[in-house]
Length: 326
Image (cartoon, rainbow, N blue to C red; front, side, top):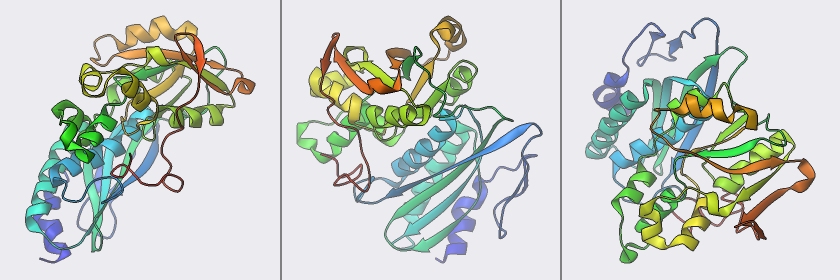
């Protein structure tokens, strides 16, 4: 089966036309309409076999992980998802693999309210790339810059679960927890949370490389420092049962790929933010505060200073990616 047959059979049906899509799949470019008074926001993510996932991983699970991780960037901007494009590099035209991938991709796209409008296929080592597009009110949107001394540092959901899911794959002899595996393969971008916190937060980022690494990006962009309380990190019962409290807290700090939101908010806005988050179904936890720049990044354990366990993952510094982490 050639690339055009693959696109026509498995992906053309994923473009659900609406007023924002003047022209979708099937031409040299998609032709899209951004609503009046909105700014376009764009992000791109790539998963590479052996770096981000283990060889032989289920194609449906890869589809949910790929799109969930990419849409999480829109959530971190407080954006409304609109469209995405897809590039597949496949070792061969395996119809069974493509069918499983496309089926789950369609389900995830409908869940996230985002539509496929184009892409590309080629032959080579298994590599999956998706570019997502969304919009925010003109001149607004959440950014990494903007945090100020005295702001609270907060996170959504629980941390470290995806790293636990990776451990289940790397060392199945230790046990396999279905909830942790789900967090690894099916990240849930916090779109509703991002929109709700946007009027109150001063800065925001999604947690892909680990809490310490991604918070570090906020601190650098904002020109500030921070203090984090290790005991306040939100941990799931599944992770605590799987690896114990010490390991769970280390993974919460540095494990990465949780795709939760880490954001800062002025203390005066905290009561209004709690009201805005009522009913969203995702817990938000205060884990620290922003300090002046000369304080750097500090970690406390029950109020006592402790050493930073690491700074998270970097593709060109670390020995390996998601599938290779130890």
